[in-house]
Image (cartoon, rainbow, N blue to C red):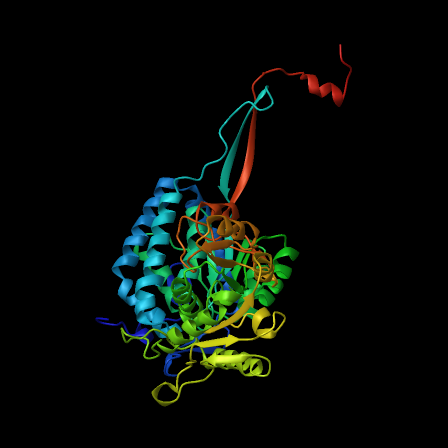
Amino acid sequence: MGNRFQVKDRFADGAQYIDGRLRSGTSGQSHTVVDPATGDEVLTYELASTADVDEAVAAAKRAFPGWSGATPGERSDALHRLAAVLAEQAEDFAYAESLQCGKPIKLSTEFDVPGTIDNTAFFAGAARHLQGQAAAEYSGDHTSYVRREAIGVVGSIAPWNYPLQMAAWKILPAIAAGNTIVLKPAELTPLTSLMFAQAAKDAGLPDGVINIVTGAGREAGEHLVGHPDVVMTSFTGSTAVGKRVAEIATATVKRLHLELGGKAPFLVFDDADLEAAAHGAVAASLINTGQDCTAATRAYVQRPLHDAFVARVAELMESVRLGDPFAPTTDLGPLVSHAQRDRVAGFVERARAYATVVTGGEIPAGDLAEGAYYRPTLIAGAAQDSEVVQSEIFGPVLVVLPFDTDDEGIALANDTPYGLAASAWSRDLYRANRATREIKAGCVWVNDHIPIISEMPHGGYKASGFGKDMSAYSFEEYTQVKHVMYDNTAVAEKDWHRTIFGDRP
């Protein structure tokens, strides 16, 4: 990894980034970032207070007129420079992401960091394409057109599973559209969000456009969402917390974007390529140690393939290499914390009473015992209404259930409160196309599961929330649409006035 920077030196001034500089929080409470692979301290910092949030919002409010008044080309140029800075610092970002999350370095290096750079480059281009409807004379007597305008200060909250990418997903469309932002990352994983804001300064973005407050959800987070100068909130996290965010945001009539939990179905029809489906299921269920809201969690396999699928997935899972996240051969790192590992283990232990743990289902011993590791786990024989099928586990656990008819498979896929992502596996075009139409999810893959691209939207149905990250569709969240209408007649006494006062000739 080359020369890794020293985290404590890098953030010696604190873990808040307000108006262009790092500073310490003033809540009087500290938090420790822990390396989940070892349990070692990475950084102890002071959490943000409500006063810190107020200062960050004030900085964003001051920066808004200048940034929103910049031309699309100027904002685009700034984001292109940011993409270049991120590329120059890619090694540091990958190191910090793996250190705070436990991600295998190959995932940080090949997925998280390049995905963020690509997303930045995409929004650099998209900043120049904030277009409204073309001008026309829709009434006959007037010319109408649509403006897209920045809405103001955005207050966003990002999760701990993809700290860098989620920070970028919140920040980039907001600032590309001319808004300014205050982002609250998860207390567990603030490092790369802070580094992203510093990179923006290196790229020449004005102070106050991007601000980071690292504080507790009940104090800093709720204060940010309810702040009277924040006009929009974007939140990614659990459905339960999303409901609380919605309560606060709607009380102050804020625009709201929610990307919440998921329980993605992985629907395998009996004509599917078994080897492709098995490999896809292992990769899609274990990405980021299963801490991914789009991860494959429920595999429904048509009965003729069910047993062979279970056997092959178990075989592949047993080949997965757990280990030091910084070892290039490591496939699976720890979960983000020991608390999260124990939560996942609890689901599996309770499932033993009603289902079969085919492989995994244990905390590894030996050198890995000090970390938050959990073996890849495959469960079979669970009922559709069981906890492991209906609840979001957020760990390296895949549950496999059989189905008979296509109707049944699609019905089972839709039978949870969630609707974020799904996949269908079939060689039959018509069968797969039916699944893409009828599965209620924001993204449906065919013969693959997980890939995302900057040009396409990400967001869910049902209890998985509403609104879109990435793509030009995200500007629907971050811009105000204004209708402008010009009179073309120059007539003082218009005919329609007579419906209000006076008489017709």
